[in-house]
Amino acid sequence: MGRALNHFEAVAVSVDMEFKHEVAEWMMGLQDRICRGLEEIDGKASFITDPWQRPGGGGGRSRVIADGNVLEKGGVMFSAVHGPVSERMAKMLQLPGDEFFATGVSIVLHPRSPMMPIIHMNVRYFELAGQTWWFGGGIDLTPHYVVPEQASWFHEQMKDVCDQTDPALYPRLKTWADDYFYIKHRQETRGVGGIFYDRMGPNEPYGRDALWAFTQAVGNRFVPIYAYMAEHNRHLPFGEAEQEWQRLRRGRYTEFNLVYDAGTKFGLETDGRTESILVSLPPLASWAYNHQTEPGSREAETLNWLKKDIDWLVAA
Amino acid sequence: MGRALNHFEAVAVSVDMEFKHEVAEWMMGLQDRICRGLEEIDGKASFITDPWQRPGGGGGRSRVIADGNVLEKGGVMFSAVHGPVSERMAKMLQLPGDEFFATGVSIVLHPRSPMMPIIHMNVRYFELAGQTWWFGGGIDLTPHYVVPEQASWFHEQMKDVCDQTDPALYPRLKTWADDYFYIKHRQETRGVGGIFYDRMGPNEPYGRDALWAFTQAVGNRFVPIYAYMAEHNRHLPFGEAEQEWQRLRRGRYTEFNLVYDAGTKFGLETDGRTESILVSLPPLASWAYNHQTEPGSREAETLNWLKKDIDWLVAA
Image (cartoon, rainbow over all chains, first blue to last red; front, side, top):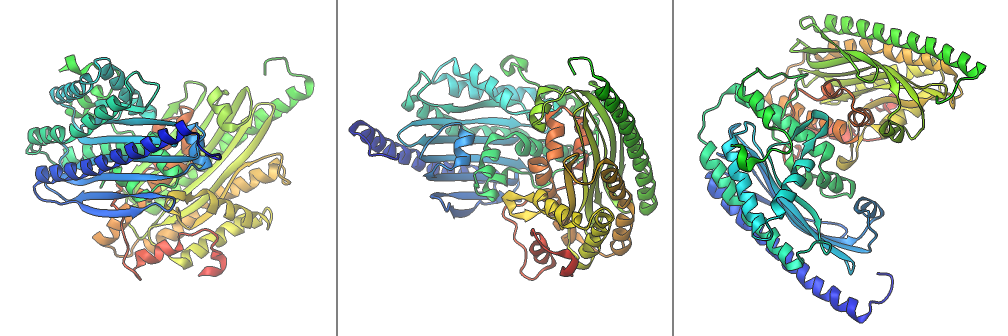
């Protein structure tokens, strides 16, 4: 802080210290529960655990799975890092600060079958010591083939999670996801969206406890959602044509993550752990020049759904 | 320009008009010659031509090749575009300006065989009407397996092209390539480098004619270099292990192009033609979590060569 803390600041910081450790512990437990849940869904592959330390302070526990029945490649990453705020970090945050603390769980799953969606979840908590704090996160779905009924079911889940805190939350975070998961140079959304939020802190009307409860609810909803998607899609037949389309869609996923994703950018630019950040990239992706879909095909139909501002609650 | 030109400005602009058209015409001819040369090397596949118009002014002629004997996917792109300088463009250029003109040829070739290198070339000319002009370009080589003798031969070619203008040029542009084609988050160079230059204009001691002659020499050297690489590598045996390594290295190539490449970034952010910009991405790429090479293997050896500041002229 560059000076001694006064009494109130010292109390505030010590309360925050305890809270942030409570959050980090819960996040670690969430990682455990999600990995167990995904192994159960997969029925074949297990996660390997890769603990790592951050030179500047803190560390993480990367868990990856590969070559499963359902999952071709997936990562469920926990981290709790802290340390002095670098110049680069302050610039990216657009906030000054001396010490930061960040903890969260981040997931990307690439299924083997093109009939299963790619899914992403992130829940995170961030603190600038003695200054501010915020939560961020969300879940979004990227089907290789959009099934409108399933996208609607997924958005109902997201609405349900949001409504427990505030009915105004779902429309706001749904729009936020539409805007965030947008591949501008392709003029298409990454998938059917979901919810996204960032920097929800003292400026919000909810207070810390409610935002924390909300963030926990988002994390807890992940496994049931993926279980539903697996149940409905894992046994659907597919062939080489569907796999080719899957590889092309994974190429778009790669474009989004490397060109636009703020978390990836922040991680790479602040010397985060590259392997943990880029675990989101697909096991196999392809690019073809000016690929065109057959009019009326399921591929063309899918592209038609990759738009902002679809009201999925009434679309199906 | 926002006002009438005075006599000297009018003369300068009219001379520039002629010059820029001369450059564009030569670039288009270079694309023709390179495509013919590559078709001859490949012996099987032919380029398809895709002309396009830029809504704001100008256009291009994209040429792509696929599924050849040597080339799995390649693009040789010509463009000559002009129009008002957008706010975004001015910001990216860090220069004010009313009207711009840009022409060039850009190439990325992804060979079928992992024993062949990926190669990239770009030659370009840029003008801000009545204000400034510059040349840029270069050739760089990204072998999936580094063969030091071939990297040395390639750098000798680059030195030879540079020396015709100035013996001081090769060391400068070689270092520029090392710095430019660097994947910071992997702490490795994209390949064995080559030469790179940008914004070489009136501030250089050479003058426009010498820089134009130099840029032409770079463009003319491309086909002989690729012919040499094909002659030495196209018939080497390879199997699934080498192809897996090739896909991983193509993943790194994708990371460089989407995260760092200034041309890609500039193109995407100024609403360039996405398909022409991203033709550089590989036909098939893969990512594996924390991939490790066997100590002493050719893959490990290759990683050892992916460093800055190797003096290839004495390294082999």
